[in-house]
Length: 295
Figure 1 (tube, rainbow, N blue to C red):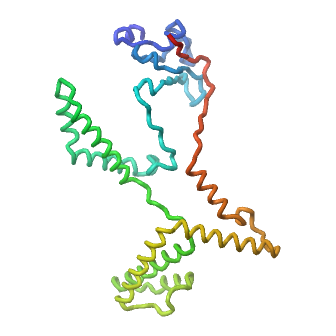
Figure 2: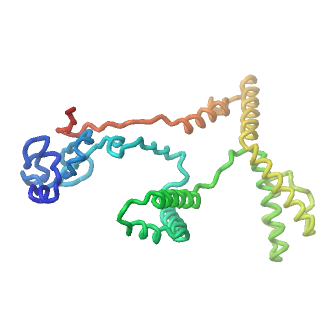
Figure 3: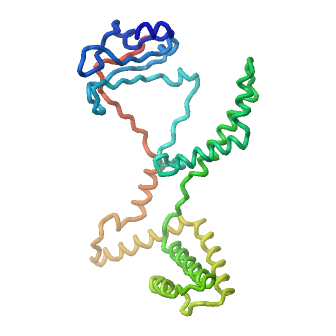
């Protein structure tokens, strides 16, 4: 391994710090060192820490785990943007189908903007050409944003009785439209919906014009309710709090304190989800740590 490092102009991080190329032993059933960390000499000043784990510390393996921690700002020569918390990201790569949809949308965008042919043309130049390079960088960023938008989670509006009632009304008129269009008997489903929601008309409309007018009016109500969904939610919680307070005064309240004060509890949860504190987990797992000393 030493010969390979010398031939490629690389430095053995552990040997440079420990003074020996044979320690530590990295194979559980032997005394030799089989695993190495080789870096370019120019990277050595930017290594903040390096180390190795006890056998079987993180995963079941007969080799030691190793790590290398770089001073990223010094390494990349600029300040790196922090990653957004998982709760604030538009989509998750763990969701089935999202990765394929993201890659497909991104590649399609890049191909539509001749990204790869422009990149090949740029690489064919012997001298740096900053203007097309910056244009490629912008298009690549736009492709990432475009693909992320395609995979973004749908916004969920806060629930409230008013919003739920409007959604039920919209479902009611959709059933009526579907029954008129397909000539399928949907009266059992419509009657079942009417039993749950008492605000529906007593007489079921069968005239298509009346159905369409009711449908359009409900769509407008839904748009208006979505714009003030949080306000409707807060009003609903306030009404619940007043109800629980009245029950408590009469000695009939048996619900938990979370039900007694639903709005403050929900506001606290909302605030916690917005301002998630940054947590740093330090794993004390090494018997050796590479600490860069000032020259």
